[in-house]
Length: 180
Image (cartoon, rainbow, N blue to C red; front, side, top):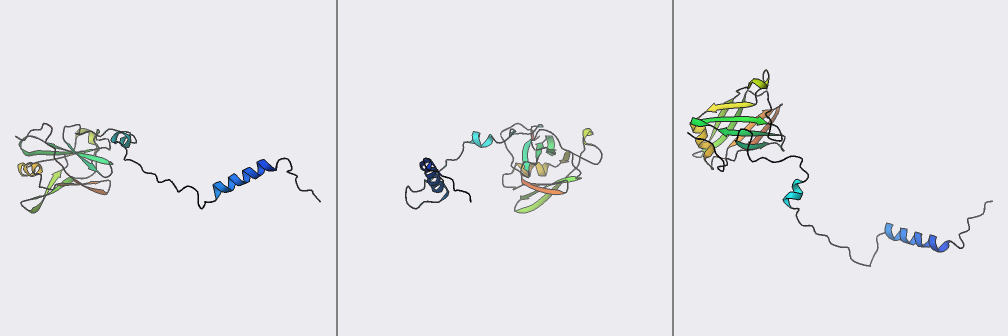
């Protein structure tokens, strides 16, 4: 038969390790009460540290930006002269145009308490490729006027790769654009 290991002379360190291990593994009853931790909200700088991109305040054509999805895409709405309204479809960084297969985008809004819909047909740019457009355009003084109305509750509806995006349009008056 084998003889059991003899820990004589080494029993104190083994006993201490066993006690420490058991105290870490088993919840105690008594002792100090669990510490309540609180956290303060992270500063906006710290919260944005996880982003690998900037959030521009206007698009590359100096228009208002509308987020589509969770920054999957953006739309840029540009007010031009005499009721010209152009919507550009942009990437998640809001810097580059993205040609899509849609033949139109739609602006839904309310005026005088009634819903209305404005369709902006595709106006492909030379670089968009066959059957695609990154630009949608209409000339409508009525639409331009309603987009400037803060009570219009305008929403842009865009379909990209079979997925429909509906986003609130907020017009910002803090940059130059012409409404001639």
